[in-house]
Every structure is written in structure tokens, then in C-alpha cells.
Amino acid sequence: MTCDSPPKTTGFLRTQRLRAVGAAGVLLAAALLTGCGQDSGDTSTDTATSEAARAVPERTTTPTNSPSASATAALTKDQKDRKTLLDSTKITFDKAVTTAEGAVSGGKVIELDLRGPGESDDDTDRESASPTATASPTGTASPTATASPTGTASPSPTATAASPTGSASPAATGPEWVATVAAKDGTEHTVRIDAVSGKVIKSTEAPDQDAGEKSRTADQVTQAKQTPQQAAKAATAKKKGTVTSLDLDDNDKNVLVWSVDVVDKNWNKTTVDVDAATGAVTSEETQTD
Image (tube, rainbow, N blue to C red; front, side):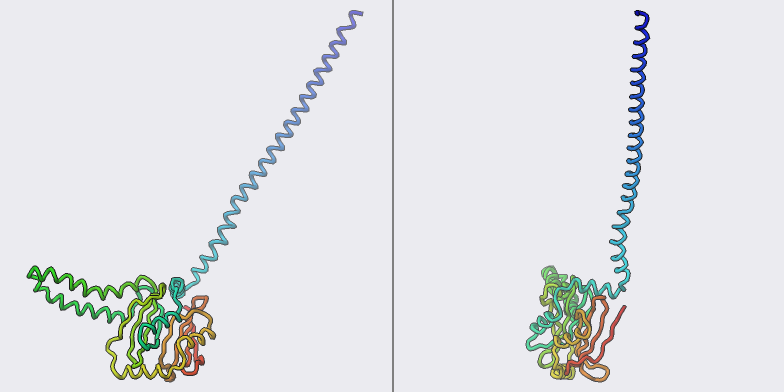
């Protein structure tokens, strides 16, 4: 009886070891399967994230930059200049007309033009040249400057003489409306208006006007039954846009017309001629460059 006990114990221990090995194998297999699953999932996620990171900048950058770049490249130099000028202008033509006529007693606008900073104006050039010319005699008086009291005084007249010339310069800092206003007797005045603030920069009588020129101007004002505002309304009814210029004069057929420049949404300029007596549109011409 005592000889049969050892084999039973040995069999029991062997069974326990087999069960432990089997459990360990199951756990190892599960760990391997879990590890493989995690590696596979991480790799696919990383790949998808990397591709999205590359794709997002391409989607956001291309549509944002391309339209603006192409739109800017499509504009000609003149179109860009018109856009820049109008973007910086706050005072419309009709307000400029009212301001200009208010600067001259009984005056009527016969010409109006929107100009950018630093653009040349013949009337302004002549006006600014005349104070300089008057200042030159002061310069010829420089020999008197040998006397120290006179010499000390000479710089101040020169400085004051230069100030009228300097008063014309503020217009160069921004856009301005330059108007020609005719008085009742036909005398023309140049009125310059800040196109941002609406204030008069300078108002001067045009030089060297003879009696014949004044009479002709007065006759044109009398014949023009259409006001600048009415002419602009007729022009913009024909061509939608912003009025940048008005000019009362005879056309090639000796018909008195208002020539009105209108800039449309594409920054093209169209000149529309409006009969100054009847208000009928007689012609239009578009400048596309």
C-alpha cells in the first residue's frame, strides 16, 4: 500500500505544470496578438495624420492666394492707378462742385477733375511760380546784406515770400479735386479741394485772361442749361460707375457738351458726352487699358 502513493503525487504535479505552461502560452499568445493589433493601429493612424497635415496647407493656401494674385495681375497700370485714387477719395464729385462754387461769389463750375498726390496742374504751376518770381528781387537785394542789420532782416522777407509757394504743397499729400469756377463776368478761378476732408486748399483767379476769353466763358455758362450734377446723372445712367471728371466745352461739331468721365467696377474709364442744353447723351467712349 505504501509503494502506490508516490506515483499518484508525481502525476498530480505533472498535471499542474502542464496546466501552468498552457496558461502561460495562452497569455503569451494574447500579448502577441494585442501587440500586433496596437502596432497596426498606430501605423495607420500616423500615416493618415501625416497625409492630412500635408493636404491641409495645400487646400488653404492655394484658394486664398490664387484669386487675389490673379486679380491684381489682371489690372493694367492705369486701372491700378484709378483703383488706388478712388480708394483714397472720400469726397464725391457733387460735394466738390458745391464746395467749389461756394468759394467764388456767384460762381459756376465749368470743369472738375480728381487728381492724385503730386499730379501736375498748369494753373497751380503758374501760381506757385509767381511768388518765386517776386521773391527774386529780394535775392537781388543781397548786396544790401553787406550791412549786417539789413542782412539780418533779409532772411525773414525771403522766408515769408517763400510761404505762398509752400502753401500750394499740402495738396501733394493726398488726392484733390481741382475745379475751374467761372464768375458771373466769365472770370475763371481755380479752386483746389482736399478729396479726403472736403476743405478748400486754395482758391485763386486764373492769370492772363483777356476780355474775349471771359466773354466766351460767360456765354458757355449761360448756354449750359444742364448743371454738372444733371450731366453726371445722365452719364451714370448710361454707364454705371463713379464720376471722376467733368468738363464744359464745345465738341467736334461745335455743340456745347459736358464731357463726363465715369470709372466702372472693373476700373475702366468711360467718357460720356452729354448735351449741355438738352441733357441727351451724344457719345461714349471706353478706355479699357
